[in-house]
Length: 282
Ligand code: SF4
Image 1 (tube, rainbow, N blue to C red):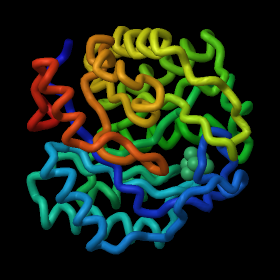
Image 2 (image 1 turned 30 degrees about the vertical axis):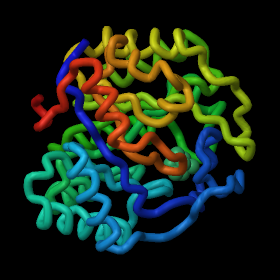
Image 3 (image 1 turned 180 degrees about the horizontal axis):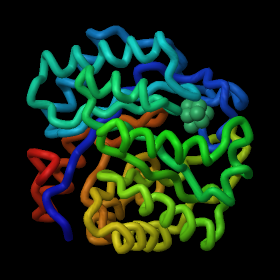
Image 4 (image 1 turned 90 degrees about the horizontal axis):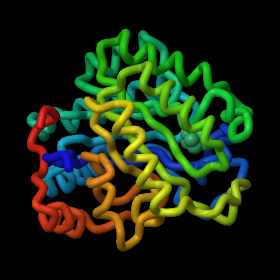
């Protein structure tokens, strides 16, 4: 098992009502899922969440907005949020922005504001993508990832398994992520929601563990983070993700679903004899 384990926390700063039709996402306005929808949390709320995450050992704090991408207003808001967190918690090492499609210029502005990383997932293979999203292209996603690297930000790039993709899609998807050499690879597992058009059964636990091992094998140097769907997919076998090759998890809640309490995850990690990372470099 790899140690230490990197903990990251997600702050959904603007939730729901997205104009895109991603068939796996409860924030899409197309599917009217029963989720909380709100625009732009206050800086105070964001700061409280950042402090909570930091107090529970997170070294990554990710500011996520629903929607296709950045516009002027959102860019200013996220830049302010980054600065607010940085000023109050200067040793919070990894401030990640996750705000969809972004130009090189927009990403440079986020870097100026103090963001260290940008998260943009490829979600699935280029071949499978039109089955799950029609409102924008996979190529557009890949291009934003290239912009992230050009802007000098660390790239956080992964996706989601269990959408009905084939084994060939999985191989193609992981190869595409590998080609971008991200610092962190978030792996999500589809969490069904009655409102969504995808009706796939959850992945078998052994299959899901096998996929983690495959991603680890393909990207031995990356931080492999198991993100959304961990509790739902692995249940009482969550601890096995570390033996399979993961060395990072998201603590606390996800974008629209609840996670374990951070203390329970920390206790699980300690019970395995694993340490918690104090910096991005271990
Ligand atoms: S994945 Fe992102 S772009 Fe797609 S519907 Fe959800 S919030 Fe919108």
